Image (cartoon, rainbow, N blue to C red; front, side, top):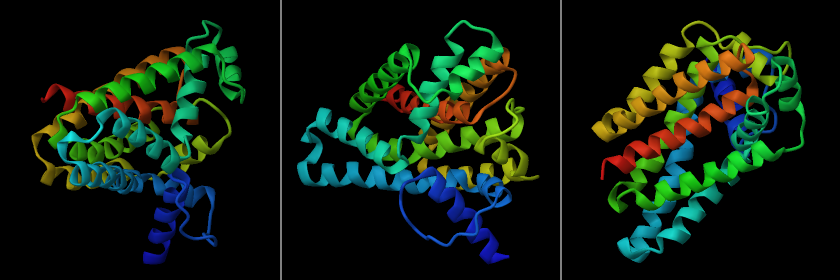
Length: 252
């Protein structure tokens, strides 16, 4: 049983990050779906790396660290860790839902590997917003914000996977939706709370902001598409992360 749990965790880890762990994983649609409950923990590992970078820079340079350079480096590091997976989903989602076409045509647009104008513009605005928030978060809270942000983003995706229907008949996202299993949301919520409890009220304010964003975006997409897709899961992660950073920024 422990081996199966470890396999499920590593399956999720190697999907959500580009950090190489193990080549001979026993991958299956079922193990992929079961990995969903570990998403917040995997987010915590990503957060530890980002927080470590920020903390290390502050230790070396003090609070006089070049904040513009640090913010840009942190965004770059996150993209390198995740392989830009969620950014791609965000752009595809923006291309589809902002196209003003029929539901069927929106879904076709989202499957197109090419990035359109709506996707490119939306992504530029997303990066600009995230960059600005990283600059405005109080220096002493920045490592904490970076630790919490990926946890909340991945918890947001768990809610989207387990509580909203999936609209496509195929795709990796379909495996997550079909095989996540009973109790996944409760287990993921437990992991999330366990990570956030030692971190104080601001962390829970960020969680509330991220979850509110998740519900709003999911409802909006439901009205547009009739359900979730893998791209939408990625978009929700990105937007929930921005919402979490916004909560930290407002706590100055």
